[in-house]
Amino acid sequence: MKKNYRIIAALAASMVMLSACGKEAAPEATTEASTEATTEASTEAATEETAQTAEEGAQDAAAEAASGSIDVSGLEVGTLADFDVDSLVKLGDYKAVTVDLEKTAVTDEDVENSLNGAFSQNPKMTEVTDRAVENGDTVNIDFVGKYADTKEEFQGGTSKGYDLVIGSGSFIDGFEDGLIGVKKGETVDLNLTFPEDYGSADLAGKDVIFTVTVNSIKVADAEPSDEWVKGLGLEDVENMDQFRAHLREELEADADAKYNEDLKNKVVEIVADNATVDEIPEKLYNRYYKQIVESLKSYVQQIYYTYGMQVSETEYVQTIMQSNGLTGTPEDYLKDLANQQTKRIMVLQAIANKENIEIDQATVDKYIQEDYDNYFSSSYSTIDEYKATFDAEDYREQIMAEKVADFLVENANISK
Image (cartoon, rainbow, N blue to C red; front, top):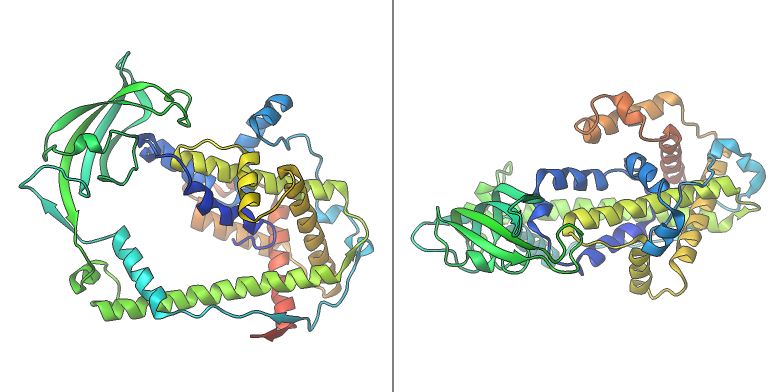
């Protein structure tokens, strides 16, 4: 379920920028355990907080502050239902507000960029059997990582059937270079050292041995072709022209979706600015501050599992602020976001009350069931187990925000 009014876009948007600055990922990031952890970290924020929050809440607050972590375990929280929102919010104009927003047009260049991106991620591969590994090849490998001194396998250092592009910098220094000159079917031992600043304390600066077997060597075609398009298995798409038309259709759909979401957010922003909130209840503010911080923690965790780079919550926020030319402390930035979020959700609830937009339990249950079926059935054995990981008020609130936003858009003057 989309969370357009609760999860702050700045946190998500900064993910790509920050991760691009990361260290090389080590082989451990490709194992089953790491994959599961990454999946958990990237799911809906309302479901991923329980275990980690409980563990972090038990830590010493001073130690957390020193590490750059943000402690929210002791905050007392409330929900919208706990307060008389109508007495706290004075609504301004919220019908027929004027919104000036232009949809981004899809160009031929966008289509070509999308095509080239699709090809670079999944090119047509041809197996090579008459030579050894060269830079740029894609090799399928099995590997086992051990500490050099004890010969004990370390966690996350083993994988089978892994496809690696030589020269991609995906693994630690020396791993990929060490496979150049190795032939299909050969096994080599790579004596390597993890970087001193590596994200895992158990591996940072450690001498290790990777035993690697090359299962196959493949090279990518230089450019896309009709044959490559046919191999994609897309319905009614068998050549480059048809694929370009398919991509344009997808890009147009994405542009429409982004425009609609931007429109909702813009209308909500205008309506919230038109309203006056006499008082923001502390427990309600704490609720949204905590949600923002827990979302932040999940992004930081995802960076670690995906890229092997350890960064604190405050360091992450500082990066966001620097990229947007903002000054002040990370704490002030997060508090400002929480204040904005609390005000907006209170205004949306006040409009829902005035316009008799109600969310019944059957609707909430329907959304929960859909999310469980589509995203979480593999992570939780029963829907009741899934329900135990979040507050159902999160769902009611999100559904309410979506419906009110739709109402506001329907009643707005849209200038394109």
